[in-house]
Length: 425
Image 1 (tube, one colour):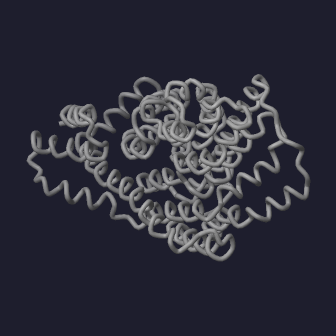
Image 2 (cartoon, helix red, strand yellow):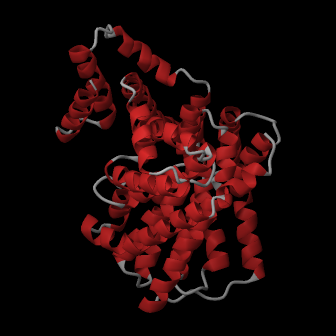
Image 3 (cartoon, helix red, strand yellow):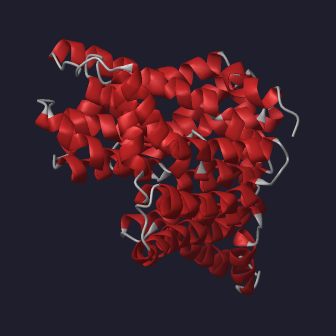
């Protein structure tokens, strides 16, 4: 049945069937041809896949990000980053990466981060003489930080699948996310210096303070979320709800840039994004159930452990696999599909599942800027109005930078575990 399951899945994908539907249909085909289990199991597994209180965090975090984005947050974060970094070589590129780091702590989504900051920063970069494809590549690569800087939607999905504390996963993503930002800013500096992209006028303390005051309520949102989770005030799911109400309060009462008329489009966009993710999780649950029933994860665990029991070797094998998978599948799809397969391997090898979860999301983030399914790449192409080939080529230095971060985290796992291990929750 395992061969039929995979063959049907890839056949549907080649035919252009959406991934979520292909997952469900391949399960139906495999059950119909090779099992006496009634097809009613499909319905039960679809329902069971999304029957989780913790998953309620996903629509609320998406809604919170959309509310904050519509409330004038993007421009305020850009202004803050510009007041601090704008004078450096390639100042506008550095501002883009820094602003994506700030906004990633609000949106929890890589494509949303690229879209929100890229739509503000790409045009100014082009107007100031930056290469159009380079400007798009900066926005695309910097958007990936949104996958790790908490709150991260993909970390929520991983936590639901494995049972790892979502609060600890959030904390584990902080330092790697900042390391990603530093690596990308290093590439910005090298390229900008070589190309002669100059910085702006030196900033002043007054300007920094003014920009900080305007953006303080946006920056407080991740502090409230993480502080509330760490302090035991609320769960990650409850934190998502708090984030929504906080975003509405800031948008309506503080910034006053959010209007009642904006809510229908915000709710519609949130509903679309939520439906895609939830339907994917539901149908992937069928696929995972059939994989488990055929003991495919267990067989893979035995096979990989026969190759080596060294955690570093196993991690290298898994990372290489995820790099390939991330090239063809969206990060949420890859997390749902690959976690049940690799989780038994890392547990047998004694690899911390919290550490592995953060590392896995980072590796899959690289796929966001590689064709053919790099969502950040396509978003940036649309914003910068350049071809995918040109933008992909300009993104190569950033891919090497992100891979360097992966290698550092494999060598020094304590970078991920430092903050979670120091907290008791």
